[in-house]
Image 1 (tube, rainbow, N blue to C red):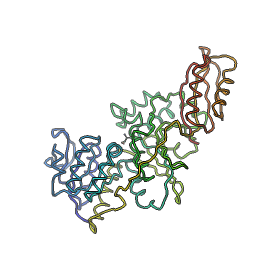
Image 2: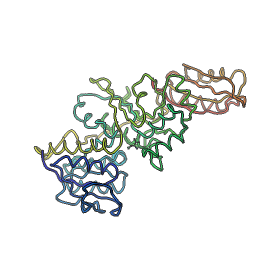
Image 3: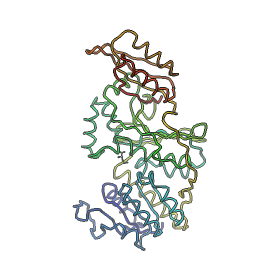
Image 4: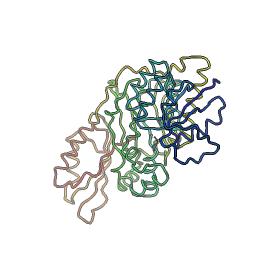
Length: 423
Ligand code: HSE
């Protein structure tokens, strides 16, 4: 395999993992590693600190370096660093989902112009091979749907809320102690991380550019122990689902939100920080890939995998992996959440008066919403009752309208939650 000189941008958990794995490959030579803080203490065996620099452009402009590995994250200065690397003719291997989801199109165009490639297996679902399979062995397929658990932190929190009956706050604290969630957990718990990943997956699966700003996104912060309990009693688990699908009219529906997933569904069985991707294509049918979505070693598996594939290609050609070149000229027509059709879980608090359930049924009926299940368990001390409804498939705009009407009635004290359901 061809010998490659590489520079690494970022030397945190993932960068260190990549460094450790690269030691096993004689043909890959790490020439420089760019870090933010040169003085930070690093507990790495046999590490030559003269490899470190705090100037990433020393790597991107270095004529000896063939490939730049970027595992620093964030959009800036990562964008400027990768732009410089591409302009200097370097191939890129990156794990940066946010950068690709927000500014990938600019980088891919530049890369095409400069005849270099950008590989990013590690950007989506860490150690699970999904980007390269979609671009290579699955290329005979028309992929029409992806439904996935792409964020380990939220899956861990939801699993503990269910299995250990923890509150959201306690489960989040545990996730932070274990190093899954960051001190500011917003990126994970509000669904941003999953949205970046489904934007990338949908773009390559449906061959159309997806606008990250048009992805409907809802996190898990409003999920209560009550929702988890009601879902369990009704035969569901709550999961943060990232989905993308091509509709019959060719429009694209991409979104991230929590869902009640039927316990028999494969995605309901994915626990703790594990990720899972269910992909539907023709002719392949349904595929499910499950594994570690984060962590030093699984992520390094994808980064180093990309690098070694590139090394073997460069042995025979100066235009490696033509499948990896981005040819997405068409922009997807993404639909709004109001135009989607779903089954729903709705939890309401009603005052204890005769006819409350009848009124809910009437308002739903007037808005074309068919009730599949309705549950009320007694009356609370404050003379209210929680009513949980599961609907058949309805249009989101109709459901939102019905809930607005219900809230106008003095009988309905609160809409506690509205979640979508996957059977
Ligand atoms: N923070 C992510 C997760 C991993 O919890 O899955 C990196 O994308």
